[in-house]
Image (cartoon, rainbow, N blue to C red; front, side, top):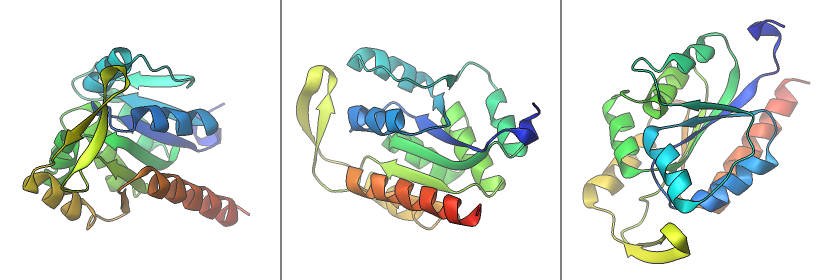
Amino acid sequence: MSVKDEKKRLAWALTGSGHYLKECIGIISRLEDVDLFLSRAAAEILQQYGYQHNVGRVFQDKTASSVPVELFYHGVYHTVVIAPTSSNTVAKMVCGISDNLVTNVFAQAGKCRVPSIVFACDTEPELESEAPHEHMVKVYPRRIDLENMQKLKTFEETTVVADMVELESAIQKRMEWLKISSS
């Protein structure tokens, strides 16, 4: 079967954020036809938090040129989800920096007009976030983090969500749209 004959898939990218990581892994486990893209930090965080995923195809950040992004040129993906998204990754995306697998996925999705859903972790001036070993901590995003999240909302084909309810809703709406448009 050639790449063109494959059923289109969802690309889910994980960054080095633990904020609602367990819940995002839960959503991933309920979806079909998902490929997982892990930044180097994401691979570390999954181990540190002790979370497992059940995804068959996993791409890790092991090449300087982010070779797996070539799949976007072949039309393999219908949607990109980047969740949870660290403030570092959001800042790079806003500045157009694509120096790792996740930021390259976002850049190539945009260039190939594949819609992206981004769950930015730093969305409020004060948040509670899970640290390793299920320990909750208060975090206070910086003004620059909040400004970058607002800037990201202006990007084409990009939906920025602020919490798990919005993330689930955006994914559900996208999947429903895909079903309708393929009928």
